[in-house]
Image (cartoon, rainbow, N blue to C red):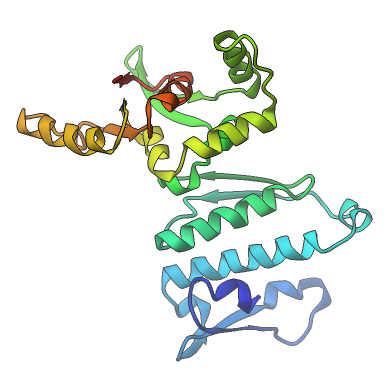
Length: 250
């Protein structure tokens, strides 16, 4: 498990058990961390505590993947629910965490669900797994609204736009994996999205807007660089499907 912790922090990890009680063996376990000073993990900072938790999760994922299909079939299904996995982790560690959660989600009969405020944890190539939560005022009351985008709807829409194509779920994921990174995932956290053609527009428009008295960041407007005209329609289809108000330039 130490090797899974090292990407986050250099230290030794030790799991200590009290006098064995078979019924409560793991409940009595205590984790010690030696990062120059050996103390219980409870006395370490939140970042290190969070890193230890995910090191355990990654070790678990590797253990399950190392088993044969028959052995995995005997494992119980596990549902992981995590609130804001990015907390206390620097950007590089966040990317590793994202990989860990994806590895666990690919274990048969296992599921992972998490809430996040980090674009790193929004994988657009798996757009049909994203749930966008909004608050809407209706009848004088605030209500939650969930927006999802199905793979079938995206495939159907693409066939209408390009009659001679025959997309599959795998090709759709591949298609979006090349156009979308964490910078473009920022649009899912914005009130409005402006899709621009290139880097110059992405850089200049917020400056011009601020000069005119409109601060795009304060107004929740995200400038999404499409990387060329040929990819604007792909991003437009995605954000429009999630009902995010948007504009685009050509």
